[in-house]
Image (cartoon, rainbow over all chains, first blue to last red; front, side, top):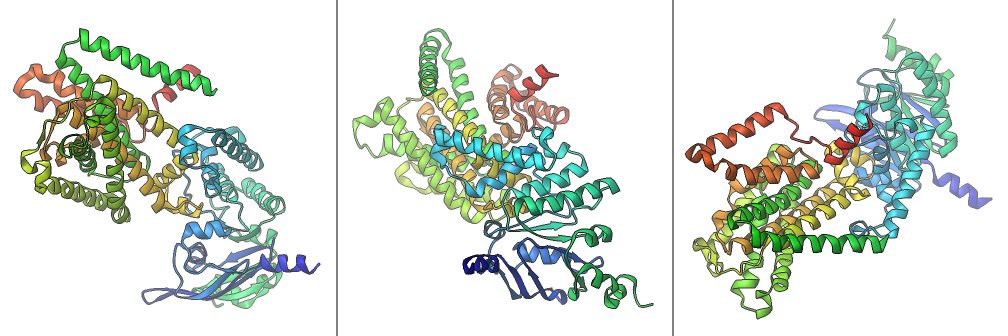
Length: 262
Length: 314
């Protein structure tokens, strides 16, 4: 039992007093976040509040001026983006960044590369190990695309997909890295009402199926309030409220940040 | 499966060997020389395609690595006078491979600092490195300096050059059709996304650069043992530009496109000899027209068999 508890505690993702300034602008100021395993948290805030900057700090695109980030007992500060990805954090992008000229299935297979089990000699000589691992990758990717409803389009170029499908492919590609924490940056941006409803279902399904913790940035309040267990509100780079969707809805500071002082 | 592959390999070797004999007996030596030059052009284009087309890193220093391969292999066969073995076909082959390895090492040393840069900056830095390599040869007296290096055993024939064309093609195709190849392509498509999916982008840029330099070195070695004379002027900036033109004409990122590019750029100046002094006016004109009509190159990002498959299915 104690073993199990340690395991659960170990999968916590904890960020403490993370800060970064660009010139004189404090883009993110002592940001705190604590996510329990398999929790679905929302990160909201008005435009320019610093939400995407937080994602860029977590994924190592920016190096924070100060603060700590600990996943599974390991510090993530100072790691490169690809090392952070290997540590178990995956993300999608607000402005879609697919590998446009690769096929849908290849986009997903790129994410498996960090667990590659064959070397250059295997690929030049096409050894049995090469075939075995490539086939394994292809099977896994097909499975994943099935979950995301993209299986039929697996041999299409990623850039030829419809917008909603591109968003889903971004999620599939991130999931292929087998993340402990999945960061979704405005996954519903540009989707219509039906697509949004479908996406809400998919996100909930992903969490249960892949046992991953999800942190999501979203502007659509209905979506955030509907699926998130806990919400962090950011304004001008600072956390102004943390709590359940109900707490957040009634919080005067949040209302002020969104609507201004009445 | 394995037996099948070995059979194909032997078949290809036998075919090239037979063609070699046939061409040497029945074809005028000038035309044979043009055909062999096309082969060297193909190797050069396919290797540069890996960096410029697949990894998306614009390099303008390819002639430098070709030079390293040429000088290294020629030093072994001609300058050092190690043993009569290096005058035989097999010895020259070993020397050419050594030249390729030397070029790969040079590629690693050049790539390490310069691949931190992007786009135009990278192009200028690689251009600079290419010139530095050439100037080095110009000033090393033991390899002839500005006089060049002559008396290199002329062992490159149709068989050896086209054997290397096949090796280069198969090796690069297999690299690109693997997880490592997808990693290289993902760097071209979107560096930030690639990094976020766990791809060490600097590492795969260097892998592309080193493999590319290796085959450029092979092309250089074959070139040296074809001409039996090399001097630093064989590897000037123009040669790098020629390689870039081959890749752009064929279609950036298309291996079969690079083969066509290599053939066109090697062949056209010869075909245009009938126009005498207007030759070098017409050649660029054809290139300009080709780029206006097909800005993505002959094949674009696609391979030739992909285009045919699509036609057949639709």
